[in-house]
Length: 213
Length: 399
Image (cartoon, rainbow over all chains, first blue to last red; front, side, top):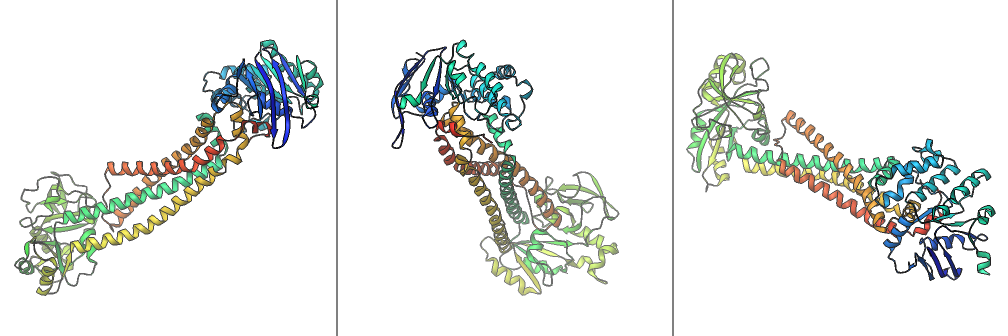
């Protein structure tokens, strides 16, 4: 298995957000996490993406526990193996589109990826926006920049939190198409979404309203 | 990483520029003050060393302050009877004496040497001071048609110069003293007296009926090593209406005045430095909160805590480095301007500090501000490193 959750629980104070979540995800598979607001969808995504530590249980990556990893090791794992598309695109305002996409490469101290970043942006229809700053882009364009940033280092798992929020139906459809090409490339996709179209195409679904119940 | 640092600073260019200017102004002020203080101290020490006399005896009615006469060598027309030198030389405790004769201030039409402003006669037979400052030929006897020129006079040893219609040979160029002596022409005392006798323009200050040969302007006195200088000075003053200037007293007094002046200026410089330090702390102390989203995003994308520390310390290093570099350049220019102004005023002896001392001042200033920046940025860098990567999930756009 590529990614496994074993009895994963998370509390904030006395509030149990997630309890005993178990799931497996193989390379090339997709997982949709659904549930009402406040049900812990984003928390589960954060736990699986090693952005947050569980109160109990553990996440296994490629069969190995991540619980014993140091903070730096977790950071490196996120950088080299995971890609994140946040609910808000989270672009750095001071950096151009191209340089925003290159941030993970800079943090990994990898050089020579500018060509790959350009290619990704061209593929995503942003060839004319490479030197623009984020405030000059539409919401859909920002989201596509975030997708390019997530894919630059060819991660084995891509996490996307409500990726089609704020997008019109056409843009949401295009982004959905793009994301569902990833499993075909041997990568795993973990989605938090309310979009029934996206949920319907996933190999696995975790409905947190049921999980909690 | 450096690219991220650079983009972050240029994006917040107003804040960045304010920090750089603040650091630059304080570094510039402190560096310029150091150069002036070091230059003035060296100038005073060198002036005293090159004077080589323990006492300077001038007429009692000399209208200018002793320190002005002693160190700035201000042109002045003062005269006393030449026999007084012999009386002084005979006093107990006096080791040797040498007389000088100050001619009328030179004007631009008198000489082929540009930069020359006054003519001083000294006695090559008894002098131990003037010729010792020269860049060569110190043992040679100076003839009536030969001159010694100050460092600020455009003369070259071996070349001819025309002064008041006389063709004279420059035999020595004196080392710089930072005083108006640098702009003086020195000749054998008898030659200056002869010029003063024959050229009406030079004779004016002595008055009608007075023969320059009967007068001197000042007597340099070196006392015996064991002699009480105060007692010798008192004995000289008892000879007649004379004023005795003690080099050590004047030097000490000027140094004290100089220290007070520089301490006041240093206070201003330190206040500017304090303002720069406050600015640095203010700039960095709010970083963990102001840019929480940015740090959280970097953490989510794989930045380690160390990476974040490097980013923040990198920003501090670039801002401080730029401020120190600009400030040192500014201080250098300010120092040069102040030096030129002081030289123009001839109010203060000034000799540039050596390159090694200036270099040390540069290193110390840079290191001090580097340390301040490090201290200012360290805690915020540490706090930022603690921001959880999950905080990126909840953030909006990042400016």
